[in-house]
Length: 402
Image 1 (tube, helix red, strand yellow):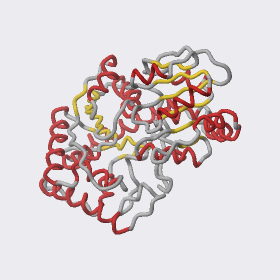
Image 2 (tube, rainbow, N blue to C red; image 1 turned 90 degrees about the vertical axis):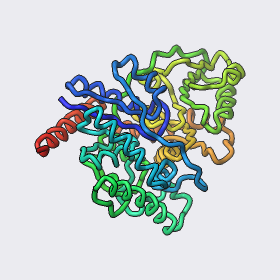
Image 3 (cartoon, rainbow, N blue to C red; image 1 turned 45 degrees about the vertical axis):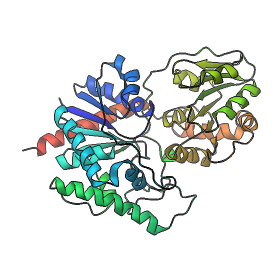
Image 4 (cartoon, one colour; image 1 turned 120 degrees about the vertical axis):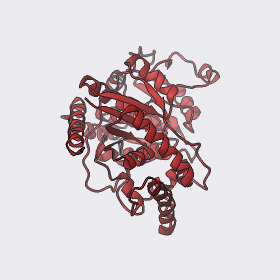
């Protein structure tokens, strides 16, 4: 059987690894050796230690300061080493050595563009294991990720050219053919969009193959709901959420039975909002239970949590704090299945927003329409389909290797 390298370079939290974990289990059961290379080793320890997997730290550089928020995927790359050919060459070299040491025959890249570039220099096949955001449409220049804020085409093109120059310098040093456009970086053996078209961060992607979402990694534990009349609310928050304190004020005043998972929460803040109807969890919640029993979900626009609630036909309140999350939240709001709390604007009356989400049947109806559309969707089948496709890719590699 084969050696497979899961590569995670950009991002934070449990989301990336949690989505991949069910597939990793199936690949291991099929006899493959799965190596994890992750950007947050401490988080990996929380998730993988009891699974029998080992992990190593991915090579990364500290984000460089650039004016304004990121405009395109190229702009993100420029913030993480792609503005400096020397730095990029060092990063690629580290990824290459990891692939050599693990004997990788296939790279599963989860928001890991430098791993994709390193695999190209070694002639290794790559599956882009993507939620949509990490696999931008193949256009030149790469599209503006903030369409609500028009940007001159020349500015967009300059971002592409700058990143492409560094990439081609590295390719030349490894005696590889140059790329004609930055979008060629994502020209890989397989693009696995593990999401639904309605939740694709790029609404105008065009024709594409969507695999659907993977099942939960099953890392959560059952939750006993606190006392409280009326509806049940589940919230999954992070300290980075811009308006989390305003939200806690609203939830406290609303008086509904509320379960909150808030890793990294300030203890003083938790004490301040302690109440019989507010239960703060010290562990991840069983998402199957939450989506079945809660009436609405609140999240920082985590793709896994957002998708799970929509598949259960439950509306959402979304508090994103960075661009990827914001783009997803806009898609949910556009379909009328949730409300977006803009981190760059005052939060407004969140108690009224929550009451509307709970009481107004329109939100629930739109969420149920999404759930009905995918009622026959089998998340377990997605894992099996991906395992079969990976086996095909490995067979192709074996047949083409001298």
